Image (cartoon, rainbow, N blue to C red; front, side, top):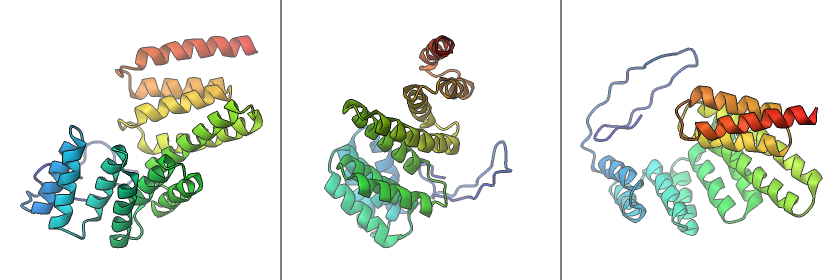
Length: 239
């Protein structure tokens, strides 16, 4: 858990725990941690300033793997993929088994068009996270979705279907792990779209209905309801 002006605290939560969980936080005067928190705020509004703030945090605390990973995220978003890759390498030197770093590296390789390296990095992230790594699972899902679209555009329809099935498998696992987190809004819709593409209309309907149960007030809710109506009609017509 992170909160501005407080020390980071890691608390293990079991599957049996439900409801509100109280976590006591302690104020921090650590200049590196404060610089990191400032960078996190800036990453939402000014990426270049965020990069400078992450670098400041690293200068103040050279052995700061979380700052290197966060720096890599922002650098990849600005298109500086080589610098992002170097930042991940620095993080991994400090923490060799670092699932988040491997997931970010997978995204970097994917953006560089290095598909096999991306798959290997995502797989490593999942292994390092002992099966729990929704970012890497989503990354694999997107990668296979894009592969499917490429095969479809080339008229290789059997390969298209195989890769859509792989995409659905990984996106389904990702959405189960992040549940009601904000990032799930996008993953649910991608998963529904993939099921539509492979004409698995009932699965698409189920995913969209689950989305509405979890995010009833989402700005996308009206469109999702429309998708469900259309899919039910399509499913009936195909019978």
